[in-house]
Length: 500
Ligand code: RNT
Ligand code: ZN
Image: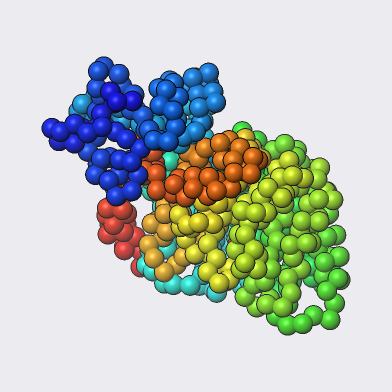
């Protein structure tokens, strides 16, 4: 260990555990870690453990054998090239399987919601009319995308700032009509109305997810799938079926599964006289929608629950128990979806993820940020986002068990920035979770070493994760923190501010 040195200016400092934590971190890391004695590994020293263990810790990235049993304290290797050559910094537990390391990229699929760009308005109804059906955007920041072309250009900008693999998440209301394919109502939508989105995705190697749109439409009476009016209910069932066909088309064209999320704002402002009738009708409607043929390997219908919404404060038809029970009793044709803005404020979705994964092979998430209620604020790098991502990682969610989508809409700030901040934060939280020595921490829990568990978990919080994140961004060919916002400002000046 002693032969490893960090170099600050012309001076040489030993790299020690103490120098990698606390106040000295930025100082050391903002310079560089250089090499000594021809060996290009730099490792941290824990101080209270046998040093020889750590000599062995200096493993080659990508080699499972070298990292075997060495996941504490954190034998991850971060490669940094600088004027002094190549340095490898140990940090956390980086997955050493070929999938992650050999490509130098993590395949973290996150679905980018198209609706942040235009305040959830879509292209199939009058955009000047207010949103209805339990959701609402607030704010009037200039630059909202008004056409498919503008929305696609804005999404391109966001995608250029975001590392990781991406899907886009579309709503049926984003159907693209033109002279050859004129407007049709939602019950008559066809795959061809999404051909331009398919072209967009193909050109960028993206997958797509889909959502029927059961809100902001004259046929909301105001109920949709739970309506006692049979004509209304049928219209929305037909819409749902059309969306199954569109989802199958998206999955086939793009060669990736399509998550199709059913959410309605059906509910009542005040105390209902009948709580079961609407739920019986909602259940029958979903049954009818899912009777439309589809390949469950390609199309993943989800049922999203919600505790309450604007105008439906007293009762929602699709409550947590309703949605979860539906998914549990129909495991062969749908999966549950949890939106972390849709529960009572002291409930946390991070705790619900392992609960559901004990029963369901696959689940879906909407990641958002509730403030006091389902406010759909931009996702931050906050405790609950980090906790959600930890659960995704340690429950095997990245192996296809958890479908991650973003769901927020802020119309009060630059929308490109809002999109980018939220997307990057979820990627950050996932990467941070991947840099956490879960095996070692679990071992402490399983052997009742709760004192050390607390100490280690607290120490993890101040590790120099930003360096790993920057490296991840570099490998993905996207800007590091601090480098993308200038571009957003330019885009606002040159493009967004001209949209009046
Ligand atoms: C609303 C739900 C739903 C919507 C999107 C637009 O509360 O979260 O998922 O946000 O479908
Ligand atoms: Zn949602």
